[in-house]
Length: 242
Ligand code: ADE
Image (tube, rainbow, N blue to C red; front, side):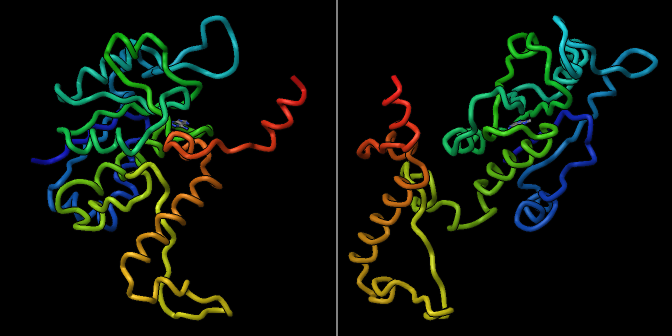
């Protein structure tokens, strides 16, 4: 069974892009996943092939029209979960990626301009998804990110490396740090415990480092994991003002 990706975009030439190379590229050649990049403009009906219009209520930029988007979405294979890439969406997680990778594929709507006419989401059962709290110039690079995360989990794409329970997020923590030879480099040495051959000690060290790094870098993950609350400097300031 192959993973079917349909991308609805104004820039189909952006696909497969980087996913045509390396592991994803080989998997594409092997038929482990398939790609159909569809030009949204082909579903416009006027002479100028218009896909957008000015925002209702005023404001800057242009909005992608629901009627044109709907025809594009309706052309995608039935039975695929539908996702729209937008900074207004729910954050993409490894859990969602795993769910998607275990399914038949995905249809992804990529936005340009100021975004989509909001009515499209409910009317066509489309899940808005964001890849992070920053704004890209369009949804295409976000779609590549989502697809990359799914494809590496498909059977036969990465072998044992992607099935590891050690991976970042799999246990609710960031992954532990890695080292390789040379043992000494620019005066810095690989932690002694990793050279000890004592598997229990190594496992304990790795867990402790995963916890410490998560607490420091991702206090949000740390608190969800059940770690002690992390006091943020800005939080302290906010508290004293209140
Ligand atoms: N389109 C523009 N910015 C985006 C983001 N952060 N995530 C998903 N799609 C986007």
